[in-house]
Length: 83
Image 1 (cartoon, one colour):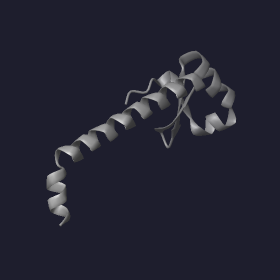
Image 2 (cartoon, rainbow, N blue to C red):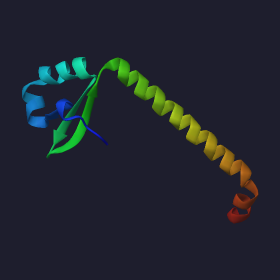
Image 3 (spheres, rainbow, N blue to C red):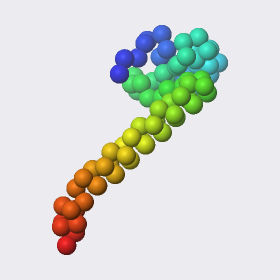
Image 4 (cartoon, helix red, strand yellow):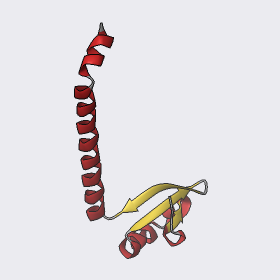
């Protein structure tokens, strides 16, 4: 995953200066907080969070539909294995 360095904030700095984190979110749309020199947390605006949640829900629905189709296509084999 590509993380723009201008949005990266070390955890200790984020704790000490959270207003910097919120300013980054306001300006860049995202702030990435690093822990032990690795990206660890993402802070984003609430509108973007709603969009992420919608994408996750759509992905979950697609996976459930594919699982149901897989079961329907292979029901006879599953029933045989269940014996």
